[in-house]
Image 1 (cartoon, rainbow, N blue to C red):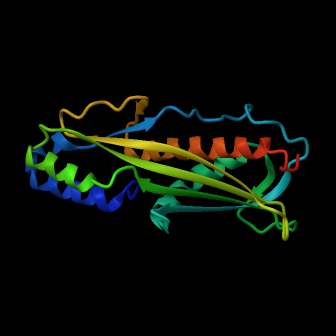
Image 2 (image 1 turned 90 degrees about the horizontal axis):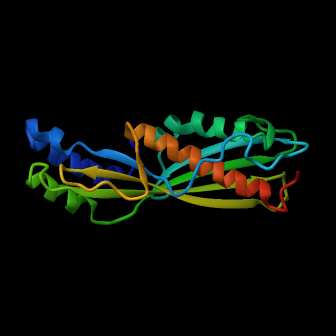
Image 3 (image 1 turned 45 degrees about the vertical axis):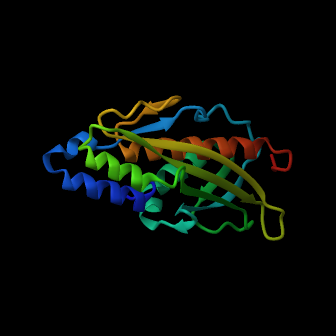
Length: 206
């Protein structure tokens, strides 16, 4: 998988490989920040007459497109938009109205010293522990058609990865079975909350 701060984690895992059989001691455990809850179908403000919209999605790492992560999360993000019932139909095809809903998730590191922390964990063979945080900035932009003023909403979430035997459990975070599942949870939370803000905006056509 290519989720998270790829370059930082690559250096961390390189040290883990050098640890040989003890590498399991420093295998990361993923946690998803639980401050923000997912908006589920039925909780959105009702749209009496949903309009069709073309769906576009991009996943970025530090502002640069990350095609592998985008492909992994596209179905999750599309399903979240479709289940909201804010648009109907929603499709990857161009709509006659020209309406577009663009979803962008940008992954940014929450600290700049991830590589240093990972190196120290490797030197102590997993006895020491640390936590690396990844931030996710989700932007949903809706345009009703050519010339229309776009409506933009932004929400933020985070994934924490603990590395090493003594790494503390992050506060206000729920453990995920894998990094992929953590990313899926964050995608659904971010997109659903941004959509909820969008549909509640007085400028959104209902």
